[in-house]
Amino acid sequence: MTSREDRIVYGCAAVLLSYPDERLSEDMSAVRAAAESLGRKGAGASLADLARTLDGMKRDEAERLYVSTFDLGRRVTLNLTYYSHGDTRNRGTTLAELAEEFAMAGMELSGGELPDFLPAMLELAASTKEGPAILAGQEAPLRALADALSREKSVFLPVVEAVLASLPKSGRRYKRELRLDEEGPPLEMVGLGNLPGYGLDHEGGGHP
Image 1: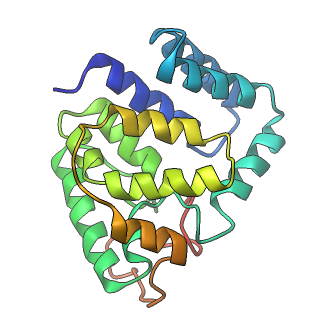
Image 2 (image 1 turned 120 degrees about the vertical axis):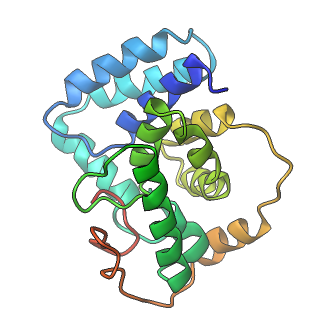
Image 3 (image 1 turned 60 degrees about the vertical axis):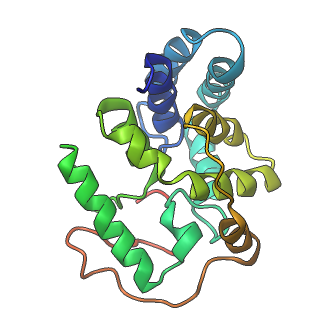
């Protein structure tokens, strides 16, 4: 069973990994309050620290940081299935399956948002009974994302690490995902427009 603390981690991470908008200061204040309820060590401290960092930036500075981290390349993206499939037919199938899981959990995606977009998956995990298991199914891509952020020495790395720490432990290996992370995902390009309501806005995903 997912604990209250895990759901707080998912909720805070969803906000911290979302594109900063006009509610930036308000959102960061809410994240700090929630994160600090987890204590002054571990995930609570990491999430609260990043919230303070972002709150101390002007909105355009926070936007530039977000875009430079997640939107300008194929190596670091918040669209998790990209790490395993690239833009291949298999990715389209996986996206369709994830979209069905969102629907079965009773959560609607925002217009144009892909079901593998990490903030959306974190919202699902924070607010529905089925969400944590759906998120846990993406553990391997989450590890690939963490590795990519680590290489970039990104301030967002502790957020993904906190999410990973909340997932059930497993003995699975991630050789294929690590290879994809090092070499880049497959390059077979196919259109995803045949999936109702879903389409990539740019290479590598990121903020829709």
